Image 1 (cartoon, rainbow, N blue to C red):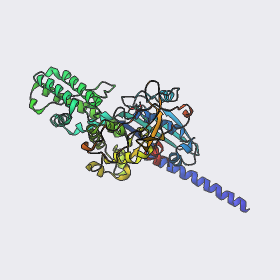
Image 2: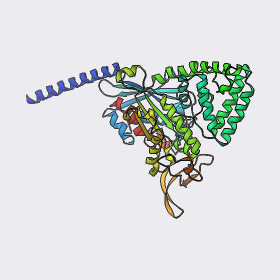
Image 3: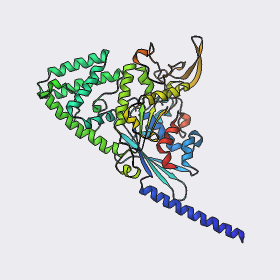
Length: 461
Ligand code: GDP
């Protein structure tokens, strides 16, 4: 008799739980909590393609290899989840399967970077009564375009003044290249038909500056051209030419580009993103010297200013505001583990003190160091009579030599230009490790689990 009563009570409790679960699911769907769109941005070479491939691979396989991603596994809870990868209706597909093949081949190959916006949709379904679903959309787009968003608040004269001031602040070869181009632009002042030629010269100058390691380069479409037809980008001109034929034609180009390319980019892409990850090649930037480092810092601050953050939960979701941002220093496997804390401090220091950073709630913005695919192992070497933290890995390039080497340490704050170490900061590039055993298992990484938890954990729990 007592057993019957206990069984009836258990049944009633199960029924109540299922109903409560169904009600929760309906409420989540109504609030849009069962889907999210993650934006992955970074300047070219920052590691977007490798990161997106590794992130998707972790989302697909993390549920069955829980020990590999403990934070993500905890967010998934006890349920088993199925994952499927699907295209997005509004963007070209991110070639996940092809990148996975290349990485898990023998020898493994880094994926070819994707330059135009692309994406995919991951459908996660819990194998439990009610089959809870979460759709995670991942969109990859050029960080070069983020830098253009401040054009929206400027007119041609103001943009030109700021762009030329940055150009003229460079030193050495970069300054020379900029000077030669400006001379040509001045000669064409009376020729409204010279726009395309002047912009062509400016594009060549920007490519030169990028090769020298500089990042704050506008307009973005000159460095990361859109795949679809778009209004042609402008070049800046000095105010002394204002009123002349070339200046007037270029100002018209500026307005057409701002309103016909930058504005739709914000409206159609950025406004639909919930969570944003901004990838920064911190060690690569340090290796490029003090000027490139200061320039990258300014570019990062400008990119982050472009986002509009949520302040009022439900309402801001409807207004297309970003709920969380993760700024990550990629390829951190280029330095020894003992340097990770410094690297993270250096990344956060790059934005410390900016009025913008102070205006965001701490739990919305996070800094992390990351290796989407860890290619090196820690080791030790004797150097100049002392033990030094070293790395072992296969160097990138033909022949793939396995080497043990000592990379530069990472400073916790950017040194003043005068205190930059003699010989600079030196880091090697590595080939991917042998990933044949990882076709159905998350790749070896640094902090991918933390990134996943920050970006999607709250929506799964
Ligand atoms: P994107 O232009 O931002 O898409 O950059 P990619 O993702 O193509 O990365 C550029 C290059 O950086 C790759 O070809 C790799 O050589 C290197 N890289 C990217 N991520 C990692 C990483 O996690 N570890 C290491 N060691 N190298 C990486």
